[in-house]
Length: 200
Image (tube, rainbow, N blue to C red; front, side, top):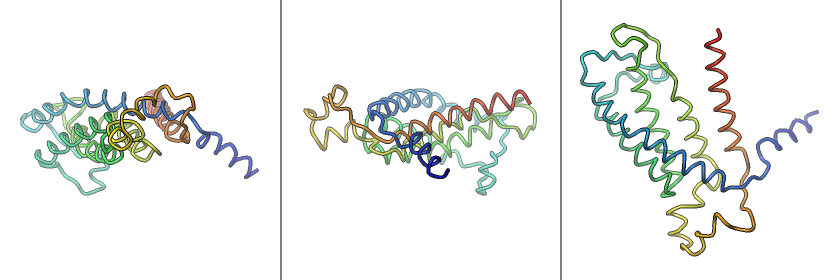
């Protein structure tokens, strides 16, 4: 029975898959996220300066003992997040860039969520969780094997002549499927959980 369970587990998470799917997802996801994040950097300035803004720390901030972070810290987190996403999309210091991205995302958007209430003028402890899934996807990508196999770093190490043929190789380069499977599971749990909560 245990051996069957291990076989199923291995089939779901460790069967080889085309690494180009993972690399393409990294490029597209980080590029789109950088574009979506850019207007939020000016929005945080408004949230801190507006007399109408009401802030309560999100539960994880409370658990870590954080209050309202200084605007300079949040501003720096926003800049680091943008740079990390752009570097990850281009394949420059990819794993480090992804790690910096999920850490900076936690501080920046954890603060943004603390300001967002269903009714801005009412004191409500409810916070939205619409972008929490991004944190987990960046975390998964930062731990994924061979995540920086294509990009600026690869060109610098192996030369453009070798790297340019990455997308049209006859022999498909593979990687364990667990990063893509975990991302799919994370998205499924997020949306199914949201739907279940609304039904309740």
